[in-house]
Amino acid sequence: MKRNAFTLIELLVVIAIIAILAAILFPVFAQAKEAAKKTQDLSNVKQIALGINMYAADYDDMFPRMVYITGVNLWGWQTPHTWREGVLPYIKSGKATYVDGANSQVFADGGIFATPAKPSSRGVYGGNFNLMAGNCHWDNAAGSSRCDQNTANGTPNGNAPFPSVSMTELDAPAQIAALWTLGIHPGWNASGDVAESSWWWFGGNQWPPVFSGPTSGDKYDADSVDWPTWAMPRYRYSQGLNAGYGDGHAKFRKKGSFNWCRDIYVKGKTHNWNDNWDWLFDAGSYCSAYAR
Image (cartoon, rainbow, N blue to C red; front, side, top):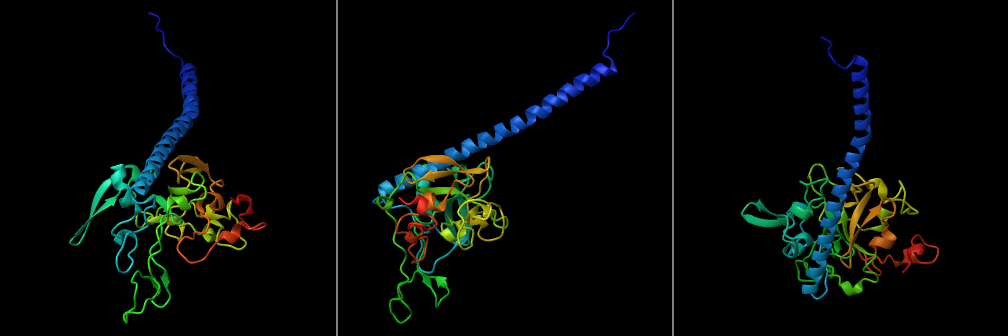
C-alpha cells in the first residue's frame, strides 16, 4: 500500500517558514508589550498628576511638600511623610505599611506609584523639586539641612523650612512638569523622595551646560548606585518617559526633548537653595530659546 508522507525537504521548508515568521513576529510582540507598559505608565502619571491638583484644591492652591517634617530633617526611608503620602488619599491606590520600631507608617508604594517596568520599587515617580518645596535652608555650621528655627541659645539661625509653592506661581502650568520617572538605586530598590531639579545636573554637571544629548542630563539615564542617577529622569519606554504637568495632563516625551529650561524650571524658583536661576534665560544665555 502506498503511504502519503512529508519528505525531509518539505519538513525543512515548513520549519524554515515557521522560523522566519517567528523572527518577524517576536519583535512585534515585544514592541506591543512595551507599548502596553508605556500606556499603563502614562495612566499612572496622569492619575498622580490629577491627585496633586486635587490636593492643591484642598490646600489653598499649594503643591504638596517634598517631605513633611518636624525637628531635624530625615531623608529617604526614614522620612515620615512625603508628597506621595500627601496625595495618597486622592488616589487610593498602592497603600503599604512600613513598620519602624514602635512606629507604624503608611507609605504610598505599589499600585499606580510603581511603573510597570519596576513594579516592586518605591518612588519611581519623582516630584519636581521646584514645585514641591524642599526641607530647610542649608546650615553650614551643622553641615546639614536642619529645620529648627533657633540655635541652642535661642538665636534665630534662619533655617526655617522653604515656603510651599502655590499653583498661581506657575507662569506656564501646561509646560512645567510636576512629576516624571526616576532611576532606581539598586541597593535600596527605590528612588529619592523627589526628582533632582537643578540645572547643573540637567546641564550635564559641566560648564558651559548642555541640556540635550549624551553629555547632558541624559547621561544619568540608568539604575545605578552612582549619584544622581536615582534622582534623575529614567527613559524606560521607547527611549522616552511620561511626564505629568502642573495643569494635570500627562504626555510622553522622547529622550533629549525633556528639557530643564522648558519643562522643569519655574521663574523665580530654585530647587532647594537661595540662588535665582532666571539669568539662564537672559538673551544669549543657555536657556534663552525657552524664555517665557
